Every structure is written in C-alpha cells, then in structure tokens.
Image (cartoon, rainbow, N blue to C red):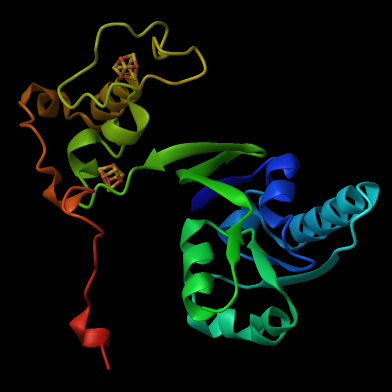
Length: 222
Ligand code: SF4
Ligand code: SF4
C-alpha cells in the first residue's frame, strides 16, 4: 500500500489560510490504513483547523467527507456536491489522489494534507516499512523475494557491504540487513548457488528516467 503521514497542523494551517470555506476530503483505502487520511483523521483535522482558526479570531467553515478512493473517478464524483459548496479542498489522500481530484475539479484549489512517503507494508501494529520503489522491472525472483533496492540501505545487487552486525544494517540497528535476509532465505531454499552469479548494472529505463511512466492495457480500453 501507499504509506503517508499527515503534514504538521501549522503547515496545513498556512496552506488553507486564504480560504473561508474548506472541504477536508479523506480517502478510505491506503491512507486510512496508515492513519493519515481516513474518516477519523478527517474528523480530527477538521476540528483542529476550526479550533486553530477560532483561536486566531478567524471564521472558517470546514466540511468533512471521505470517499472510498481518491484515485478512482467513480468515487471522486461522489464529492462533487461538497466540492461545489467550498472554496478549496484539503485532500488527505496520497499525491496520486490529490492530483486526480485536482484534475476532476479544475476550478477549485486542491491542497495536500499529507506527505506521501513510500510503498510499504504494515509490519506490526503502528509500524509501516518500505518494500518497493516501483522500479518498473521486478527482480524479486533473483533475490529470494527480498527487494535489495528498497530494503538494502546501499541498494547493493551483488552481495552485502560487509558492515552488517548481528543481522542489522550498519546504517541503523533498527534496520534488518536485507542481504542477511536474502542469504538466509536462499539457504533455507537450498539455493545458495544463486548467490554466485554476478548481477549486471540495472537498466533503469523502466524506472524514473525518461519522464512520467504509463501502463497501457489495450484489452481494457474502450
Ligand atoms: S525489484 Fe523493483 S518492483 Fe520489485 S520490489 Fe524492488 S523496487 Fe519494487
Ligand atoms: S548492512 Fe546490509 S542492508 Fe545495510 S547497506 Fe550493508 S548490505 Fe545493505
């Protein structure tokens, strides 16, 4: 899922300050799961803004709404009546959701309320960890299902750096050494020979280089 965290309230207050009618728009999927932009966070954010502006003697009307996903048109359209009543939208979705809403409602500013951080997994309650950079050419099969680019601090493709201690990355004892995990998994599979191969430099043409990427599925086009 996409992991995000809310911007500090002081920053959000500055962003929304020019507007006297504001819609705080939540997203009920990824950002809900990581406690950044679901229904509960929308309610908390709306109350915090009302209070903060009241304290400053400024009157602001804040409306609340959460749609299932801000990255899908059919859900965004449900927000149209609320959007029409307001002067700006504070979106608590990831950067994709903010831009999607902005592209649907072109006459109203759509402002980001969260910082989109990474693609990751929930490791245990309250702990989200990065697991994928979206490189466009997945090589997990060559690394025992452990992504060396998102999980090794140095993005090494040809074995560990030698700095690992007790299974932890030398960058921080909070980080498991990705290569230690790769080696342990290959050992468990009986496939240690896979570690002897040289991995050539990656072709990054499917990644960020070359501008915004597209995925075309002609079989689904109408
Ligand atoms: S190899 Fe690429 S696509 Fe696969 S998990 Fe790593 S970054 Fe993501
Ligand atoms: S200690 Fe392990 S995870 Fe950290 S940089 Fe070295 S090989 Fe990568």
